[in-house]
Structures are given as C-alpha cells and as structure tokens.
Image (cartoon, rainbow, N blue to C red):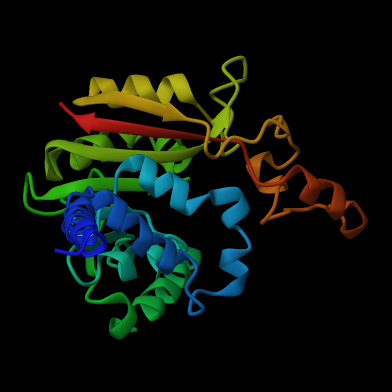
Length: 273
C-alpha cells in the first residue's frame, strides 16, 4: 500500500474514535453556545450576558441536554429562554412558577406569569415546558420523587428567606431530585459582615450553604463566575438600586450606577446526599 494512504488509513479511524470518545458535555457545550448566541434570543437579554454569564453558569452546574431540569421561580423567563430550547429535543424543563389560584398573589406576579406563559407558548422553539404551581409550603410538589437531574434557581433566595420558606423550598428540591442530583443556586451576595436581617435582596453565602446542608445537600463547589467586586451591597434601595432596576435613581445619576454593573452574586453547586 502507498505509504501516504497507509498513514491516512491509520489516522482517519483514530480521529473518528477520538471524536466518539468525547464526553457528552463537550458536545452539549456547543449546543448550549448556539442557544445562547441564537438570533432568536432577544437582544436586550443578550446584553445582560456580561453580568449573568449563562454559558459559564450552566456548564459549572454540569447541565446536559438530556436532563430533566426544574427551574424554580423563572420570573419572566430570562433563563427559560436558554434552558427550554437547550432541553427541547432530549430532555425536559419543568417551570415551577407562581400559584395563580392563590387569592393573595399580587397582580404584579400575575403579570410576570402571563409574560412567561406567552414566551413558552412558542412550542416550536421551546418544546413542551411542564408548568408546576409552586407556593411552598402550601404547594411544594415539583414532580415525582427522584425524577429530576437538576434544580436551578436564579436570584430568588432572598424572597424565600424573607417569607421564611427557604427550608420548604430546599425540602421540595431534595425530594424531586435523584440521588446525586444537582441543586444550582445563583443569588445576590451580602458580605459576611453585613446585616443579614435587613431585606435588601442580598443574602449571606454562609447562610445559604448552612440551610442547604441542613436540608440534605452537600456543597460541591462555589464559583465567582457571577462575582462583582465593584458592588458594595450597600445601596439606598438595596440590590434594586443597581441595573437593571435603577429604582429611584435620578436620571442624571444613572450612568454611575450603571458603571457599577449588576449585583455581586454567589454561584453554588450542591448535590443531593
């Protein structure tokens, strides 16, 4: 056999084998990148990637496209816009949103839910997102016990802490997760020297870790993916002084607040024990 072709004959199968041996996560990462960079994703939401780092955050949590993922308190769907298309073909997304049957639910939250529901109505892009009414402890079932691979929550812990239901949330997450399943948490971070009792939208990282570990989870790793050293967490309107809210910030002062950026955030990966 010609030496050149003999060499190629050895290289090609080896190359094919090398590709086939790539971990699923390596292939999944490319899919995640394409979803995040999709032209169908709203430009104003892409503009916040510099602060929210969706690719780095989700790969840190270990997401893969064939997982069953529960998104707690998805709000108007900033992360749903990424998670749903990513999981559409091989996995499943469950959105644990507000309970519309609650008579105490403010109209503000009903409007947020309506915007989210309208977003996911595009089943061609998002697939069939399962919707669960979540209002712990009154309604806290997220699905069949041991059925989910991952539960994620983004910037919602302060609300549950304020309502004194964070333990109920953690119990629900632990129940729906498979053994070894992942709980991913992103939350506005209060310095450990701060006043943890004042409602500012910020929470101490040590408190989140302690509550999670008391409710059946083990901290695997903490990341500074979403850290912002410029954020002092000491603002007139709490975290809402910062972008994107800029609550009660005079127009002539907005540039200096925008220059700070969005909040300093903890990014925590737990596993179910």
